[in-house]
Length: 136
Image 1 (cartoon, rainbow, N blue to C red):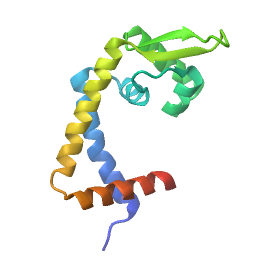
Image 2 (cartoon, helix red, strand yellow):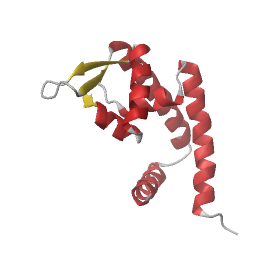
Image 3 (cartoon, rainbow, N blue to C red):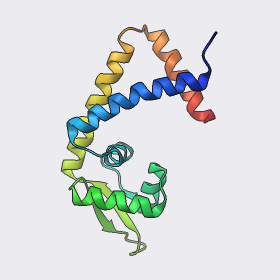
């Protein structure tokens, strides 16, 4: 009997979550900090609303995560030029460094995943995952 898509997705999620938790532990990051550093692109400034949207959080929860990132020295905030009530968020040099370490760990994990697959299979998996993401 073949497994349901949802069962396969949950099994994959559990395995990926273990890797994510290992990276978080290694870098001393909370899950929210980890996710925030991934969604903040290096060299890019985003608004507070866009930050919360990228994190799939309410503005108030996004604000709490943002305050923690500021306190930890990973991001800086400035008031917006057009609207002084709006915040503009960007990574600090320390935030950029930690983000790069996250990316390096993620690439190492991806290399382990792709290491036993040929190039055509990697592209098939990438395509299938993109399709699933689009549907969900």
